[in-house]
Image 1 (cartoon, rainbow, N blue to C red):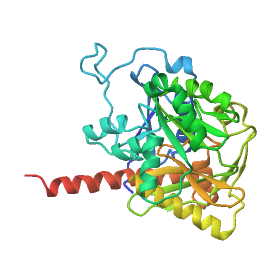
Image 2: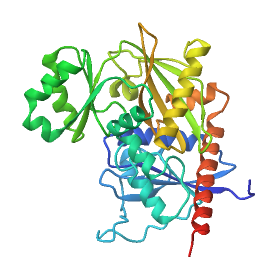
Image 3: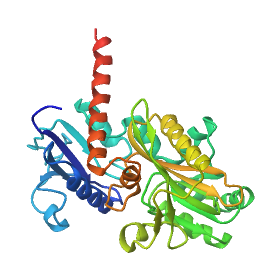
Length: 356
């Protein structure tokens, strides 16, 4: 540990439908970073994608959006004078334009260290359809699903509805492929509900997934590391409604949690094993939260999805699961920053080895 404070550029906000969630996560990280070790530079990205250095993510939205913004795009007239001097960047943008590899690509081009997943693993983890294809190739358990493109839906609604009814048992979960925080997700109990659920999901993405519903328990497990990732104790989400939707996650807060989940030692070990294997399959680094479904009758555990920038709010499972596993929030953030430096140094050494 160096004597001087390390400068951490906290990136939050962004253009996705999860903008408000990012503000909550950033505020929580800001409050929990050790002020004796780190100096935080708060960088707010508005819904148009423009950037501004602000006092902190604790400011109300009106204050965050006041004043002038800058763009990094050279053809944009507002591209200008925004200068950031940081030792490492900490993206906490959920969804497209932040969690999907686009921001990570900008940071890679700038050749700066950053916390969390890199470009390819971010992009793959963001796309639920690609994730499932990779997990299947790695022989990891996933529920039955169908991927539907918007054009296919417009042109062949009847055949797609027939395929869904033929291949998947009710109920179904209909999801945008590249979005998180339960935005745009519907649960359909009757075949007549499928068309409106599809239309709702297509509001957010041109590719959606229809999954066969699993009656059982929702489990989550936090993963931390680079080349040797470790899994936390699993937790359980006990939804207040049909499933853990956006309204309950961030507004009502009526869902209950089992932290840690009440599982047998064998079930805990299996969940942790699948979490680490999913992390490795995507080629992740830094952090991820892996979500699971445990079927009620068989107790078989299925991988649902991976989140490469999980929620960091005060009620989010990612930090809470590490806390119950023995790693407090401030130390977790410090570890994530160390992992970001470690990956950057390793990549730089490889580049030097192959330099002409």
